[in-house]
Image (spheres, helix red, strand yellow):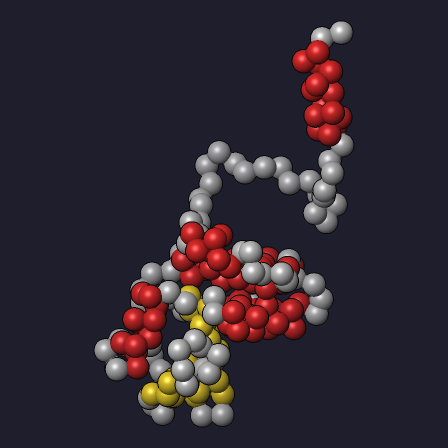
Length: 173
């Protein structure tokens, strides 16, 4: 017998039988031409060791991916945008929208993302941005009126919620 062959036997057996399968389908692997999303190093050094909830981790990773790919300042993603994403919802346990809300709340409470609310009369729009220096600078510019938030109707009020690190809610029109 060849010693190298014997050493490879457990690997060969493991390759023959997939250990983990997601929803009955084995992952085929990453294609040679694919896009990548770079994550900030503090995610791996500080956040990942702290996150103990799978829903929070999935929502955090998804929101980070969405925000990192966006341009502008601050980079924002809306709750309706997240709730309409079938791939995100498919990855969450039922009831999916409740899990999405819980994951967002935990990520905001941890300080990973910031939560903003645009009040439009009796309606409101929830927005999320990365808790980064650049996005916080963008929020400050929004507060001072130096950056537009897009086409908001007259009387709209932007509220950066109390769950945002650094103090009380900021309100401005």
